[in-house]
Image 1 (cartoon, one colour):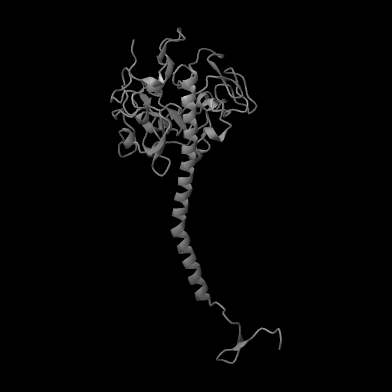
Image 2: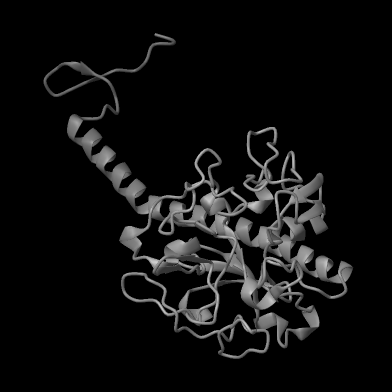
Length: 325
């Protein structure tokens, strides 16, 4: 009859549907699909990680444009790591969107290319912004200031990117009573002998670099409600804006943090498929390992103090920065 679905008769004389799956065939199909998914998932995960690394590198290149513009607009002077703390109102700088209390290198560099770092930058230490954060502990509101692999690392102090401050702009004060007694700033761009081989900015792990991998704690925002929170040496990202070089002089040198008998040193963070992204002084970017940049790493992941500083030193020398009288 027209419009009727054809039927077939099985060997037992019954009527069945054409092409039906048996239970065994269905289970085999599910098993094959599961196997394919298990094979493809790692590849998809790696592809996403590679994509995030590419976005991170693009943001670093933009920061590199700001590095050059800052030097061009400030008599060849490279940006400082962070302006020193004098009092609750100084040091202040103009950034995109207003005046900011103690801006970091990243805030100053990105402002040069017109990228606003904060919705409501504050000019003093104690003023509270529209998000409830004080002027010296604001979180970046623009994604351009944050690495996509660690998208929650938004604090301006405990940030995702660190600066080669020891050699390019250590603006900490030698003498708190002398507001111009910078430890190593200003540094001229023309003093960098080989800009393509001198690290400027890189993915930073913070002071957790001083600890074995299994002792590193989760990221902490620099919380205003507790003056001590957000400053745990073993926490990922702590003082991440300061990027220490591989070799550190423990007597006359400098490191991101000193607490009692423990020195909290920072290093690059191999968060992009076991590598960290690096912006060099000439503006190009590359992905590097700790070892390729000269860091000394033990089997537990602790970064030591006896690495090679050639990739950080402005004269390509393996010397630690030391404080001169």
